[in-house]
Image (cartoon, rainbow, N blue to C red):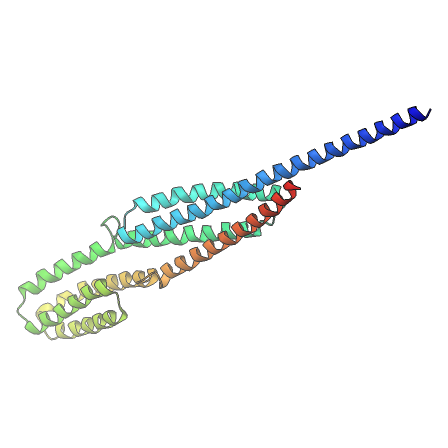
Length: 267
């Protein structure tokens, strides 16, 4: 009887031990699976950061070279970013992690994309990309004016016209407010001098169309921003800096979770 009782107890102990080991192994496997998932998520976010860096590169190359190849490359990277972002959100939801960071990033990158393509549209309208825009229309006016003033003999008119053209060229070279003011002043002087020469008054309607076109061009330049610290280029620059900061914050969050998970697996 005693021997039977001892055997029974030993059997119970063995069964309990085996059950405990099974639970331990199951927990270990669960922690390991979750660790693998977290490491995938960490890699996803690194990929997102790399794709933002690639978009920034194409954005900057576009502003420097003004070639449509770069918006195309930007768009392709943006599409890849969105796919990777969807996957990252799925992984983080499986880990019951806060995805508000990623939702904010999704909104931020959409704004970045839209702002960039708004700028591309403005460059296209100006004619900086395909040589068929407002700047080419302005060249047509300049050619007509040059032909007209080459035929007349009013020195006072020619002097004011030359000053106007100098202001125009200096604006495109330096893009400063002072050149716009000078251009406005000389345009007013030109109108005044024309009024004193009846044989040149036929030029007034053409001058009106030129003034309207030049104002439209300068308004677009003002919207774009003369440097990346002004206008829409500043908005673009500020937005992408926030995007990069938010991605870095998410990377740090996931890395901390990976570190804690590794500690649990080792136990």
